[in-house]
Amino acid sequence: MREYEKMVRGEIYNPSDDELTSMRKHARELTYEYNHSTEDEQGKRQKLLRELFGGCGKFIYCEPPIRFDYGKNTSVGENFFSNFNLVILDCAPVRIGKQCFIGPNVSIVTPVHPLLACDRNMRSAPNGGKFDYEYAKPITIGDNVWLASNVVVCGGVTIGSDSVIGAGSVVTHDIPSGVLAAGNPCRVIRPLSEQDKLQIPNE
Image 1: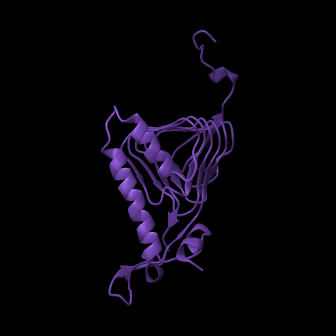
Image 2: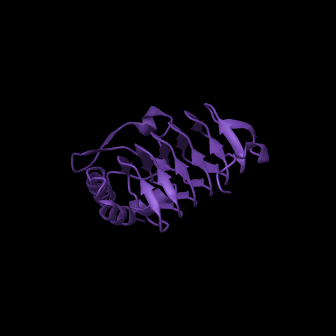
Image 3: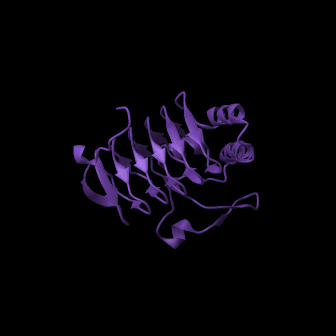
């Protein structure tokens, strides 16, 4: 089995594998080009995002800079928006629904390192290089979710649709749909309701 297949299945894998190294290099080249593009190059940005993401809706916008491990393991729905400094380490699949808003400095991280140092420490490869063993857990974010600034979403988490994650939260467990949740670790504060509705002009 390829190391890539092990990785996306959540099994222990060797990230120094040649194929994985090449895939990460390609993602970094795309994000470098994206991050160094200008405001007047929206067409170029859209093309780069569509090459980077594994799947995406018709309208997506990411404020540079962005960083990905692979890009191809991440899919986002229609009307996706992310602010400055989005980091997605997509060693396992990352699925984000439609109408999702991502604040600045958000990290969505699927990799997991072993807890024991004897399992986690760097090893020597036959070619003289160094590598470590790791595994990854998928992340699923539903429709209409807002992740406020400086949120960290950890591997294995599902965030239900129509929920809001408050600034600075570290999401280590599943969050249900339709709630305001915040904290470290992130926890449900209260359900969202009609009382939270704003008076939107002309609606």
